[in-house]
Length: 408
Image (cartoon, rainbow, N blue to C red; front, side, top):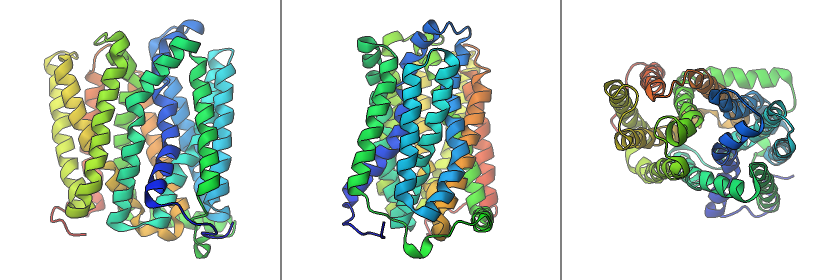
């Protein structure tokens, strides 16, 4: 495939297409949350905490494969690499749809995650191929805005599928979406990897690309911060069903409303970021929001302690929404800052960054998820500790001086 051999999609279509590619990741998690109870019943799973493996195994598979897709895309191009990942994702969805026991279901989720890794890595690479600087941060925010709207409706869609056809139909919906995205991408997206950035397959060159990525102090520091925030997000998503639907607040069928409401706030943050980053700059905006993130996670932890792990629903939801809002004003800018100096090795760089952030987030989510005790205290501790360590990582990346002047 020649570079830009066909007319590229407009910016609006590009944002929509990349967002839907990324939406496969979110859809694969959020619309399965209402299925936890029927899956537990059908497979006779003892502990509710074990159901969190449905999310964790998927994220581990995604993290492990990101280095493969990133380096491969620098060799053969973005198009064939992404299409191969979507095919693997579809196979995993099919395994989940026909699984006879919980182990087979988890195996399908692992394969699904391994395929979904291509969506995460190549989405970042596609954006970096076409944009840089503040414009890259703006486009990334718009993509994330569309992407984050999936969790607003995904639990409700999952609940509807389960009510009409059972929990296996949720996997069928994932399979159908992957086919639709593959067709759209094949017909409309040309190869974005510039010929001069294509690299011959060489373990030495792949290693050099990894070394180049890890040699940038800013990339490493901001990558650590992203991983910690991803850990917060994974902990929340993994335990959200137990927190809202069953064990803490007992919302039952109103769970999709609570989950979707917080997701809507996150979408609003990404939309705001796409405008604010142009005037404030990605450094100033993300650094200020990181400080506010630490402040509000401290308030969340304090509320959890004061109310012995079960603060009033409105207090908890309000603080959580504020924390997630600030997180979404921070993460896309951190991603853009981390990727900015690595255009020549964007595929490898995005895969290394994805490996660190996804695996780190999944491991944090798995460890904390296993400690769920019927309260929001483990979640509160995760947020405040992760926020403080993320702040230290960014301070290290900026040589102990946050950029609050709006420069760059």
